[in-house]
Length: 456
Image (cartoon, rainbow, N blue to C red; front, side, top):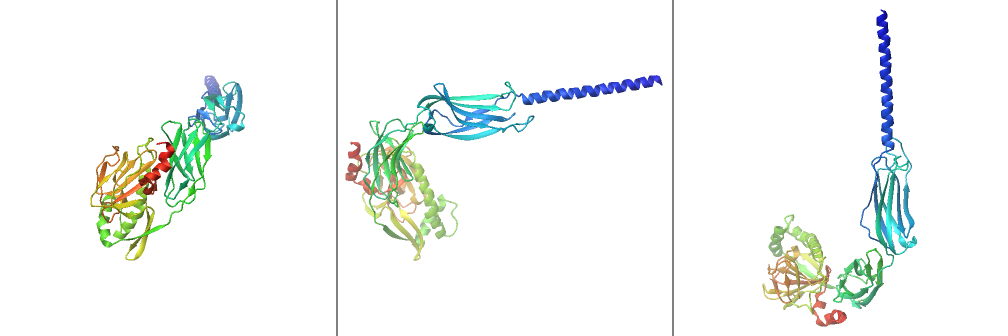
């Protein structure tokens, strides 16, 4: 009996000792885990979400800071120049917890700086972003990451001087602006209200030319200026003015017949299988939606012009009778009822059937395929924003990328697309804007408005 009691007492002592050891072990594990959390050593990550080499008069700096352990404690942005530091941004967070994330895991911030108001001088400097987390590592200061970027402070905009600007222009008309810039620019050209016309270097590289145009329905422009943007984002401007010539409206009536629909709709169905409904409904869809798509294709084709001037002197007009003019306001009738209204953006010229179509001037073939209402179409890039378009062709006799000379064969006339009979639809475009070809067919206009100005 006594022996059993001794065994019982020994077992209780052993059990108590095990419990105590377990508690001590749990305490040690807890302290270790807490220390691991509180003194974690993973540093924040810091990024500037764009390449910055220059700081201009006004700059936007997109910051991205992340810390997925203890969280972000503070973020500081400053510029150091000649041993002096100027702080632009300081974001500090209050601790939210001890044994879990104490601050946000991510910070996205775009810092806008007007450098001219900061006292920082033009010249070399260092842009620095520093981020600390909520760890107690580093003598309780937290883990720190610093990103330093060498930059050049440049707050002076380029000087822009207009040497020549178009004095008179009409809706649907063209012209040029000649200007100089005091320093290299990453973007420069002419702004006319919400339109932008890029500039290109002339032969000596110090003068620049921008071909400009007004849409056919344009009113008097409210803002006309040359702008130049340097690498630091500074914008230099020079304002000029133009006199607007009025153009009388020209109206035309187009009768759509059942015979025309039966002839044309199968052609459009072949290229646009999404056409549905009656032939008249398909015609209206083609004359509107397909026309809109075609305009986007033409604009895209004209968006990256050859930087050199490829053309010379006047553009050649195809021999033949004029059938429709530029900016004619067309109302379409079916069985005596008006069903649509569109603007004709070119000149129609008719001669014999399937007559040879030649390049109006030297250029590069940038488009040569079927194009909806235009049918088989060729577009030539003449350089620096000047383009010509030839449509309704029965066949195309040139290849994409070919350099063609003035009067070189590029196709044959036809009645493809929205054409009632064999003819050539000819257009001139300036940076994708349709303009009247009559100016470009006129050598006197070319000499007075372009050749004499640029010294050719």
